[in-house]
Image (cartoon, rainbow, N blue to C red; front, side, top):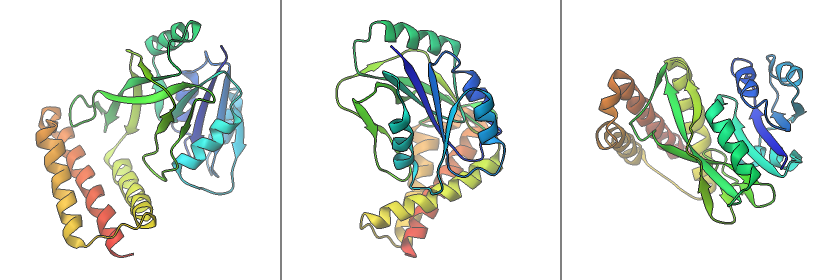
Length: 244
């Protein structure tokens, strides 16, 4: 069974080399770049990846489907540039592909926020479907928060995927602002409308849900900052929607 790894990227020079090094076991690596202005493309090519550069940005789901269309392996593993396959997960993938019982598999993802791996706050265990037989799954067309849509039953891998999503608070705030804009656009395209009351309500509920009900307080100050950042993102998503 040949395995293709697919990654979409833009200005990921900081992350991409470690991501690619973690999947050296793959038969093929495809990177679709959406106009990086740093060394992302050079790094990808130097580490043996096949690189395609696009001139537009259709959103996360459509862009990942572009990458999927370029894969030639029997199986596909989809990664983000800030993710790493652990040796344990690599071994589990290899064992699974020797005699697969399902056409798709998910895995738990352990994510880092400002230098700390988060075990609560709704972040763990964060099972994500990333491994699938080519031709049996595709990505949703969502502009943000896309997901793999598989045809059949999904199996489960035990080892976790590492996710270095927010190295510092500045990056968390920048991504929150970018994602809230994209989410507001997607909601508006689906006919959703909102006022400031909805923005305040969604923001407050997000903080309470993550910090209290999802026990974010057990993650210390990082849990508080995570809940506050997520709440701000929810508030701005609906605030921006209210202005459309």
